[in-house]
Length: 426
Image (cartoon, rainbow, N blue to C red; front, side, top):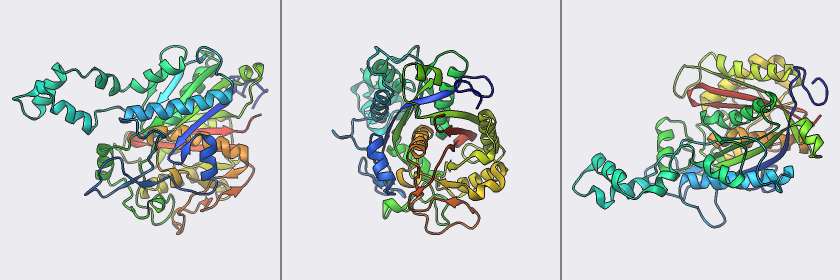
């Protein structure tokens, strides 16, 4: 690790001083941890929109105290803001006029949902026209300013920038299901380069809407085990049949360890290494030889200056899809070798579902909480082990154990792969 403030490569050590969390199990870290430690599930039957005729009718939806705030971008923003405020309070950064560094936001691409499209189609400006021409006419001549300001890619980051006042323009990131980890990596790299001594990394996603559900269903990616919903997500189990869409947000306040110590902030842990590698094999499937996933994990270990034997626990991507889970095992085996046999592995997606763009950030928060509490969260619904995936799965109940270093994986559609090496405070 080098000295206390620099790593072995002479770069600033990047500390985490605040974290925030929202998932289908609740708003805030305490509410989530209480449920996750007991192996509770946040997967439920969808009531947000009709699911008649759909093969999948379940998701890890997030419910606001005052009801659903409206569109996907609005809920995506609300979750991110709540988690960011929780993180800033923990970091002791609420008194300054704004956040003293850049902000990196992992968020899904925004697009018009069916209610908004219907409003366009029914607008009087399209009278006399049909179909697509009618929609275009309404969009050109109607008063849809608020809709335009909501449904564009950067809208969530822009609203967060107004609320949190980071330094400079916010950066929106969309690397599929690796987005949350990518946002963290961008913050880490900015601090290491000396461009800033603090950064805000946010992952947030509220993609549970009708069209997205249908798209993933057409890809045969979703579980159809609708009853009971809590039993649907079963990573690494022989009976797995797909992932469960979910919503949530995770936020980390990143600082150079030097800055954190200088202002007396508590270090919750450090981002020891980041790695990524993409492949060009398929829009959704991983490369069969696993080279890109293997490369991402190896790059993370190399960046961290960590040997495979230093990994105490793997917070797996573990989506519960047949191909992905097996590919992750083969890749871990290729990198960790025999050490994998004695390394606990689990996937919190079994309890909260797959939070897509937010997953990497949420799982980083949970990894640091496991380090803090010396408790490994379980993979629930692990009733029938897959003989082709001989992992030491933390099965069905949390497991006590001292953890100093965690490997957290995030793999996305389009060959986007990222891995993080997370460690206890020095």
